[in-house]
Image 1: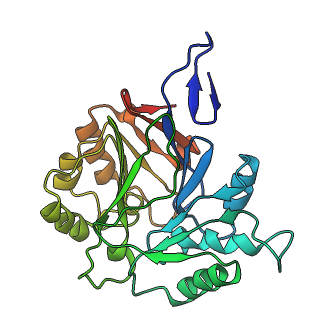
Image 2: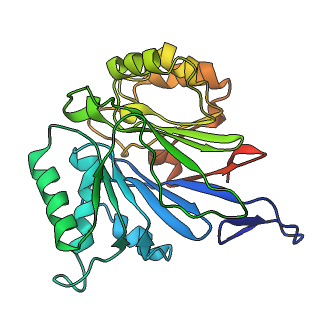
Length: 281
């Protein structure tokens, strides 16, 4: 089967419904999720700098991002944004055009934060700060539908730095849903469940690269995903994902084949359909 402008076509030529694509790029020990819908693109996190995120986008024919959302200021999630200024045209234009930058209220990460905001000013990219209850806009309506991106964490009254400040986004598209969690830890997961006790999603980005201090069983069970994906580097020094975390997901998913990891599987693509839900492509 092949992908054309957000549609899926089977070999027999029968057109299926439009889908929202979510590609977890293999960026080593970091996180970068490319979202695509109707020929338009956006990013949740950008991976570490020098991981080749811009090369990957250019190879996929992505020359414009409707928005980039950087969940927190750690280099393995936000560093790739600094690659906008690398390559040809260093002083004039970014390698990939970014229409809007979303950030959170993370109080940490001085160098990374200052570098990111400096590039945004240099290239004239508008910057908005997100907190719980905000919606991320910018992807177009296609076939009478548009996916939703709602911020579930952190609340505006929370003052956090680093992992605890990770922006958690619930993606909704009819029967298809996903939860992007960044580096949220188990304490943040518990607080999130207190605010959103009915939280669920068909696809879950495993929090904090599957560290032992994340993916509490109550959280994973409540979300009850059909698929889970963890973005990790091969033979990383943190030994992510932790074995006990992997076992939790295997227990909740009921099938180890529904648990994906970028160190073994490379870049992983899912599709969110209004009628069919989440499918692994």
